[in-house]
Amino acid sequence: MIFGNPSELAIQIEIVPEWCSNRFLEGIFCVYLDRQRLSSSHAHTDTLTVVTRQLLSGLSASVADVPKPYPLPDGFIGKGREDLFRMLYELTYPSNATDLSVQNCWNYVISPDSMTDRGFHLFIYRDDSSEVLLGGSIDAGIVVSTSMPIGSAFAIAREANEYAMRHFDASNRASGNTC
Image (cartoon, rainbow, N blue to C red; front, side):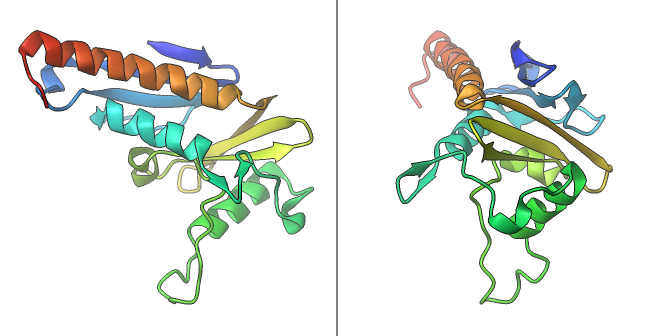
């Protein structure tokens, strides 16, 4: 099932019953941004209720009652897509993170852990009256972006999460599991 528009932002969820158990809804999770699939070429198992909830949570987090997406820091404005991706990556995952005085900034990253673990990252920020999603992989040399009305990414993530939760709940009811 695909939620959204792959030409802008889409989330693909494919439930694989053979991978599922009575406690976990397993399957394939992919994000598409500006027609580019942000994933390795290998199929990976993801716990769909977890990955969609993480994406939704990343999109809805607020700091000091300012909802996402946040505007870019002044020093980031006007940078090219690749430079901006690297700057947001370094802000989120500083290379000197072992130094306890260094603070990670989680304001812009929205990629679920499973996506990040595979080397792909998804960021969001506010630009005038729209939200800009910037995704890619430093290792794969991919950086793509799209601009959408504010709240669009959250609406797509919410649809994907509701789909995963409906299937998980239905599966548990069918099996008599109450976990």
